[in-house]
Image (tube, rainbow, N blue to C red):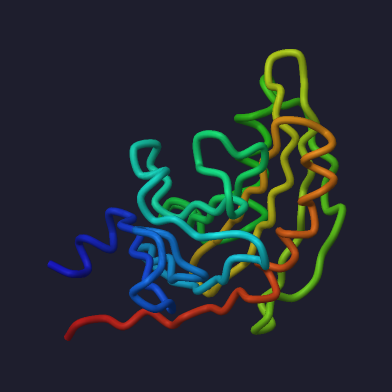
Length: 183
């Protein structure tokens, strides 16, 4: 039963904070998917929220302290790609093809490196278009048998530039967790 829930891309966020924190916001958490899991920490001045984006299918969202998921000018969310994707290049090629009409072509691999635990990642940048006003930066991480991605999205250029480094902070905290299979 547990694996079925995981297979449905249930994302569970565990807190590392004390009981005095705001409801459903944490300094970090764990994202579970059908073939992988990873932990991340919120950058300094940000919180991780496991309920605000749930109605949008995003149970792991981040935004600056003092704002909310609904009103923040810059947000982030973390996910694991569908089980049909185990290779980051295949996932990204499909994502670009699907988003091209609305987003245009991204600046590809504007940055690359290793996560805090040594997983390879690269970042694509999606500029706003006439049909899509958001500024976005997406980090794609190749995991064993899965692809993780973290999206930073801003409503305007000033907010995007101000918070662009927050994505890199999340990547520094990123750590792959080997899935445990009930036997």
